Image 1 (cartoon, one colour):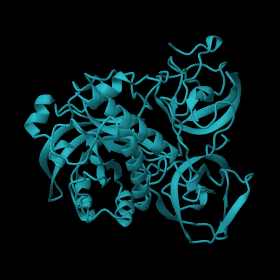
Image 2 (cartoon, one colour):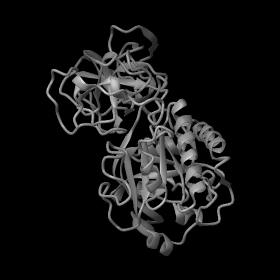
Image 3 (tube, rainbow, N blue to C red):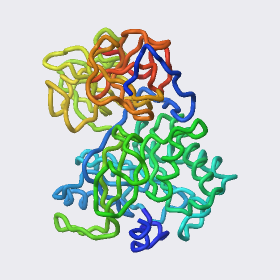
Length: 441
């Protein structure tokens, strides 16, 4: 972000440029560093992969339409912060809704106070003594601004931490306090905590405190290194085992212009495999009679309200549920209720629609060793795929009973169909169900 903040020139930026064995259980980490998210029912996480770009002012919808000719599919939004340098005439709730409907994913970026030893001229800063309180205040402001734009809980909100002098021990302490309190505060509001950092300062220091019991670990990192390499692994200042499961983005090329569809923008280029904004999309009820919305994805759940034929509903995400007609997909609405997707005008009435995210409620892996993922909800099921690293996000879709691990028989079905014991996932409970995660059908 440094080119947008006026903190570091482009030239300067370039130059700076064991599988879990259940028989020998370890104790899950405490409140730090894996603080649980407090997800409300109308929430879900969204993952963006591929290429994205960031630019100072949110582009017009016409510009975004023209840029559909590019390979970019994610655009950042500077949605708040006392150090935000650009006006945002386009950035409204309607813009967020329409940009999402046009197929764009959004990377919410909050440009708040900066460490006192940052390289640059931004006026609003924090010290080791003020970092914690400012972080909590700014995180609360970020949550309020995100909600006003229609950026729903479950979204990742990224705090911008510009490049700073990490030889200053007090400044390193200030950054850790700020990021930790940012993380705790946005988690309490049901959001994921992301952070934008330089590879040679913020990333290095957060990597060093990744497993510390003193600091809450952010859910995702967006790293700046303008080397032209979009790789999300092999980073010099953070091992591949950290932020290892859809938790990384990289700003790999700085200040330059590109033209797509006849529209020229000045951008940075990004590679992503990370959580971004969750934004509801509107669809129409296609049933000829009133459609029941329920508390869970099955007709066995209580009815919360009836929706008239032809009415518009705001869909957050899709999950597994009871077969209705030709589909076992159910849609979660912004009020937290569920409706059978068979009667909603999403692109498919037989399976998941690619334009909508799967309903997931991430929690960090709390074990101190890699957590085995299995083909079913129990230790008797075969292991499958790579285990989840400590601190990795487990993107939980639903929960089911399985074999006892620690104090819990609850198992989590992940977004990729694999299963992990809930005992080692940092959500609201280590022994029973965690709202608002639905039961698996």
